[in-house]
Image 1 (cartoon, rainbow, N blue to C red):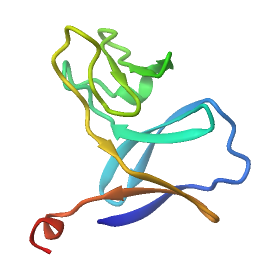
Image 2 (spheres, rainbow, N blue to C red; image 1 turned 180 degrees about the vertical axis):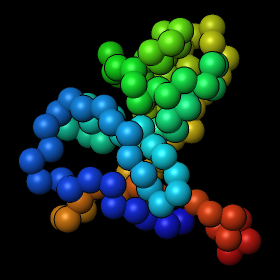
Image 3 (tube, rainbow, N blue to C red; image 1 turned 90 degrees about the horizontal axis):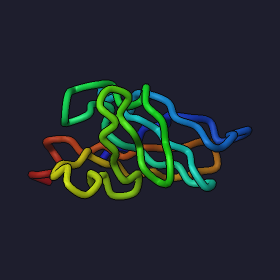
Image 4 (tube, one colour; image 1 turned 60 degrees about the horizontal axis):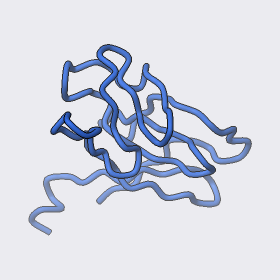
Length: 108
């Protein structure tokens, strides 16, 4: 797994929702309750950019059809039957890092 710095952590103001790049992967960063979560940017329901949505009650809400996903697990709300990918996040002294697996992680 490769770790990419996506944010400086000095002066982070919670809550926040933004799109960032972790290498070649776009991620949706959610800052809530003094934690940072990284999820896929594309809603699996209609393909919308979910980073343009909002966060409410621990759920990331898609701006198009209001589908919602748990920010910790990526699991869709009851009745949806879908999920979005989540990525590991590390808070380091110099910033916020997101881990992205590559094809080589499978064979390594």
